[in-house]
Image (cartoon, rainbow, N blue to C red; front, side, top):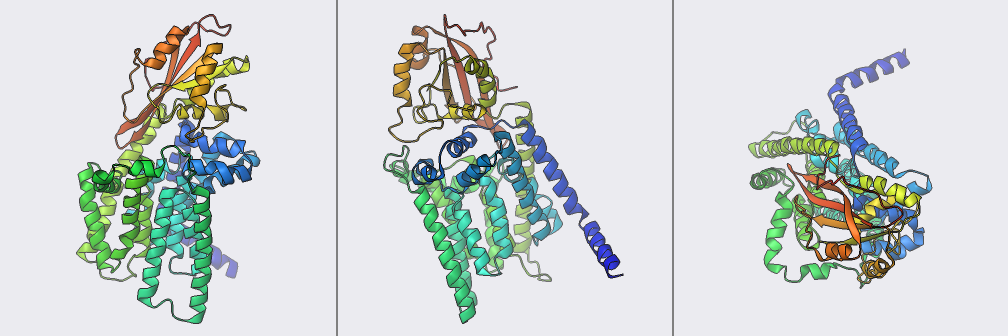
Length: 507
């Protein structure tokens, strides 16, 4: 009788949550659909290549420091690769992490259904931090767990905040802001009183400081790191405020001007909850993003962060809902509605067009690699990257296919010799040259007067193929990357390629 009653109770509970189960199933289906058609790009490949090629000591003691990132993601990749997970399999694991995070949001958050059923389908939670296999996929699940355990044992909360700091530099700033907010809250509420509570707080603090110290040790930049933070700050003071504002409005609403009333509504709502100081992580994030790096995938972290802050400060059941509270909830809903449209655009774009040119270029080069042809890589418009984006080709092979790359990944050291080696090996007439072009905008024309292209023409190479891809942002595509293929006239592997893919990013 007891077992029957228990089963009936569970069945009734499941039936009562059918909207959440339906949303979770739909979310999982969309993520699986998008992963099937997604072409990984260079940033996804770089971490994979580092983890695949290096020992754990070399990874943490030397090479991660050049990535401007803590090493939690690289460690996970290192473990997965030794467990024989493939490059394609990695993306499915990221999808599972995203689905798990969404399940926590749907079934554990205190939000009304109109919010919890809408938020998972925003562009960053559905696409950027679910389909794209980068460290940021870990941020939503950690932020949701932080919100879930915020008012519980600090010995559980501290490792979560510490792990967040080890995901990425921007997540580290969020981690520090959350710790500061937690400290203020404990002082305000008198939570530091009592010997038992004090022991928990002290133990949690030691755990958190240890994880922070490890993140700092791992990510501390070497002296020869190219594009060092100090070089970014030079002459930046007059733009600093503008970049800080941009970091807060770019990835929230479209048009961006709507992001201003969004943040005003959020601030009013938190002020009504007596929790305005919870915006400290947002402010610190904006300041750091302005100084340290401002990219689409960075600023999107504000979405799970705002969800986390709203979750932590959510009013107790039965509380009076003020107009400020209503305004804050409405702002979240409006933001979600706009970003759901962005998500639809991103998934449709990735389905019909190439997110990255790497897979197509790798398939083209595979016969050359199989026959032992010599392949070199260089760049045309990207003197800072010097061909970094060609790294995206390497995970599709079991060895380094570029004769002028000394390692099967890209080194961001100022002393990276790839271009110097290229100029030397060009004299030996490699069979194929891959020229990398990258642009932050959607347009990337071929300039036949480009010095590198003219050099290859004089050296006896002809342009035969081009593979392009671009990243969807808002309702546009940007960060366009192209691999231009030049083949040496007279090479035994030279193919007659009259097909001129003149810049199309379509499959």
